[in-house]
Amino acid sequence: MNGTKETVQEMAQALTTYCATLSHDQTENTTHIVICPPFTLLPLLSEHLKGTPFFLGAQNCHEKLSGPYTGDISANMLLEFGVSHVILGHSERRQNHGELDGTIRGKVVTATKAGLTPIVCIGETRDQRETDNYTDVLGWQIEGSLPNDFTGILAYEPIWAIGTGLTASIEQITETMCFLQEELIRQFGEVGKKIPILYGGSVTTENAAAILSIPEVSGVLVGGQSLNADTFLSIIQCHCHAH
Image 1 (cartoon, rainbow, N blue to C red):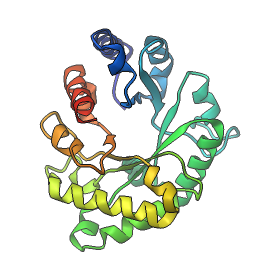
Image 2: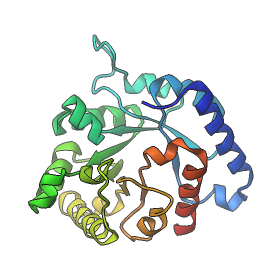
Image 3: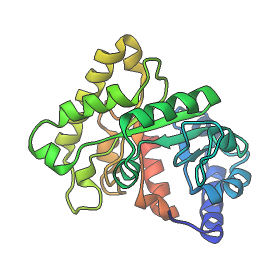
Image 4: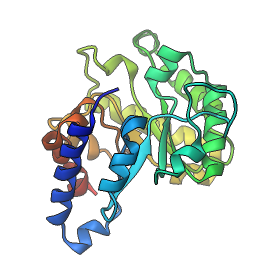
């Protein structure tokens, strides 16, 4: 819940300026950059991002396509503004709004049928991490949140390392990402190998390069550092260099 028309216009200008510095090969590489602003700013960004290699994403959608759901937004509504991706099951939605795996699974199914690429978040709390049952928690979240024919993106965000002053070490991230890749293969077979896994625990300009060097990390889910154009672009450049 950050950003105004003025700040988004400044960000869009920085992004388009950055695009102008890229070569054709760089804009055609496999790096996908998705910007996910609040709903009110989707129309504005949709216009600004036309003709750029950036994708537009939303922060949530409802599991129904229409109906008496005051305050919610549907996948079809998002599509009208050029949205291609949607974040589902973010830790703040799970914690602050009581969203359960089953609800998130329903949203994933609906979003996928509508033509959106779901970015599904999972993660463990500090208590779950310290009692060493976090792998069970993550495995259950994958099983409960992802449908059997899942073709989207998984994002791992250790809740205990977000805004707490605690930082996940590269060793902890590597170990967990390896587990997630193995778990996806266990649950989905060969298809599981093709599911990208993002890391989203307090990614900064200082740790982005090291995180992106982990083979199992397909990309990063950037939070607070994406609110500043300079830091966000620095992280983007780390990803381009790593991939």
